[in-house]
Image (cartoon, rainbow, N blue to C red; front, side, top):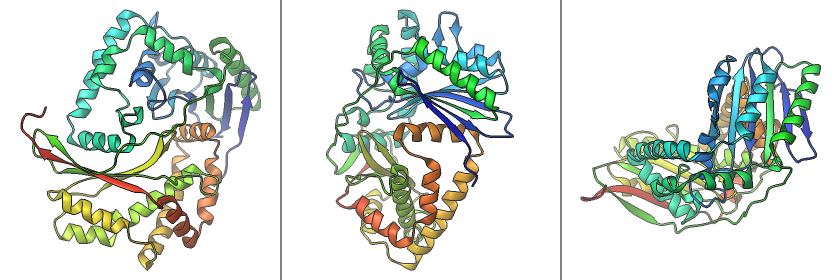
Length: 412
């Protein structure tokens, strides 16, 4: 894979920026990532997500329309430890960058626009809660993180959503949207002169909009009580799930992302549709479809989740725990690792031809102090023996909990 040339700057205010050169691409990507997300300290759960929505509101109306007038698309997302605002377009780079900084750097919170947004977000939350899988996931998050913010939906709760005010949003904004917590990224086919011009523009705008202060967080990890929970639900449902805390999750060969990938490969080798285990439980009629597997790390803790459907959830949960306890040593495990390593490298290489995917990956890596291209090199050189050793270390003393839905009258 050809590694693109990347220019980086950190300005005296603490604001950082990078420009990634992708010759031959007509489209351009511009984004600002904030080192603050839904699980980070905030008085009212859901404030980070609510804030993301309301920053699009300006005195002149929704700023998205001004991006559209330039033929550009704009969007945003809120994750556990970051919020990102971005725009893509062809041409008009200086105007798009100006608008992006205005979007993130010029809040406009009023009683009217906050009151109008609250029921919209509450309805969005209600829509998610109509999915029985949400209730399994909610139970697992509470088992993982107790009463911490990481245990809650990124949108918050109906109660906290309705308690958010212009004053509370302003406080969250002023505490977190600081120069030292912000990172700008541009990806596209830029000339040397354009690179210099963009950095000058970004330096000026960052000084104009953002206070030159660093940010810090309470990195205390919150934990709940893992067990086997039956979750009351008003109708019959086959949803089940398992989750596990990874207490030894750490940088493998200097990369949290690599640790995440190795645990994902391990879980897939044991539970995916390609595994002998899956063939066995499918033939026994125990699973309705394939399992959804994910591994995540955050400031609040590292964990995995497994979600599925079965008419015999207790049996499936027991069998999953059994197979997870088995060591990696067979011929299938070796072949699966080799195949998944090739698949991951190929899939990532293809993904890096998508400017939005590449930009978000690089921006997240910059906040984590990582380099995704180094990650690919490390993974490509990793042997099966090293993989087994690292997985044993990562999963040592892990704790696993489960949840499944049971029909219960009177539950709404």
